[in-house]
Image (cartoon, rainbow, N blue to C red):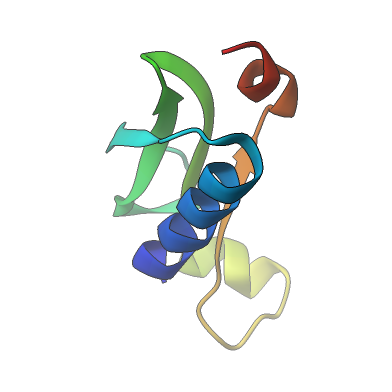
Length: 79
């Protein structure tokens, strides 16, 4: 779910880059409404995370809930 994806991303960035993330609500068609966030480091946007929407899961014939994130590592290294 959203919370687990956020926890994994937070742990990855803290242990690998000593960076702390902050999230703010976001909206994307492929994420479930209310379960999506923009990811920031030092007030710079680096990506997003969320729970994949039911319609997107149906398109790929996924039967279980899925959550994920996408970040721009170039931005992480320069922040």
